[in-house]
Length: 433
Image 1 (tube, one colour):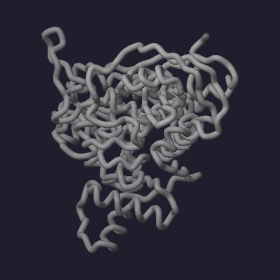
Image 2: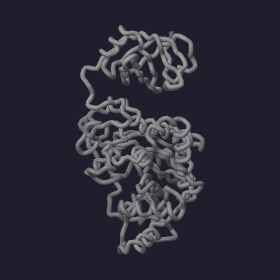
Image 3: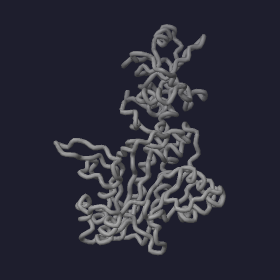
Image 4: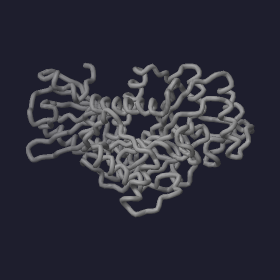
């Protein structure tokens, strides 16, 4: 017999079947016992009526890996409406020691550090696993949406020879006796590939040596990057972002419905058009409502992001908000200035449920503009030499964005700490498991 999954039992009612998985729970009643088997698809109920078999079951610790054979029969009270009777089983491996929590419970009764330390086992719990199933479906939707819009997936280096994009917040490594760095972003390379494919995206890790010890910062996270050429301005980029989030949410609903249910969430609606507010106007709104003097501010504080998200929900019925026109001095040197509003840029952030998820912009695309932008900041051209070569031979107007996958999933699930939805998180203190 070929092994089947728990969700396939209904199609085999009346037949001999073979299942394999973990002992999720044992229920030892007076007249009968049940072995609840867990596999990657879900749970299966195995009825143990024979006394000899019951005694064997009593000796099986939870999380023992077993292979079960028996007859599938209909029972409306069993998971999926079918259970296995007259079972026999073989033990494939046994746990060396008990876990620090009971996995069968709907929610683990353990602290976050305990859960993270025991992540390979804690994630066997359906609720703990759900965010990662949502993330997988979201990435699938990200790829499928951009593939449908004519983008090409690329894979750029994560070891780079210079650290110029964000100053000193980089991880240095020894590279055959030379100094190298872990990439903070694929930004420079995805811009270069616009000159080849016009539209590109990447899913990969990025590294930030920022000494933040907060619930929303990580030293390594997954970035969903995209860049597109021949844009008229940043609004074309925002249009793609809307399609990307709609595709990600639709794919989660289609392919991760069980995870949505396990997480106890409702997926958000993506409006046909994302509401937009200019940075200067956003400061005016916040100042008028709170009495704060925000003149001269160059960025939004976390409290301001939360206020604006609440405003967007009240005024536009949207959990999504685009804030455009950040001051040029605050944005990266490659951000295109706004010709209509000196001092402001065509850079933007997307806020979702009170938190920044995306930073994006139209970029500069002319070599002379790059030289002028870098020198205006009092920096030398030399560290950027190889990057600037991309623009010597004709680059189209272009722009792009990056989504922090873990932040997005944290917002979707309501996680208080991004580490809850990060597979083996890396931060100031954690480098294992």
